[in-house]
Image (tube, rainbow, N blue to C red):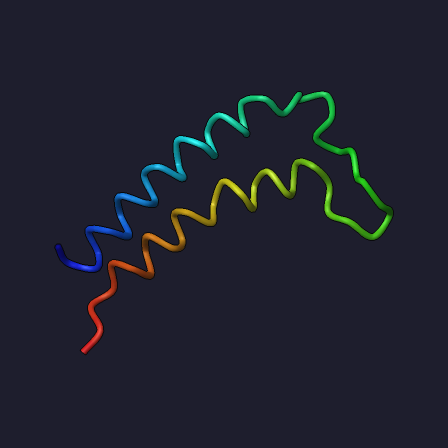
Length: 64
């Protein structure tokens, strides 16, 4: 098994979990912040939603 295959399988599993978590975030609470200096729940959700794609993109790069 190539390294990329293992990473992609793990990313697929994480994507499923991430999808379930993001579906449970109430839209009415996206601006809520746990602390004044924290990111809002919406910002955190966006971060969580985009990280797997960024990791997959990095993993697919051809490194010479």
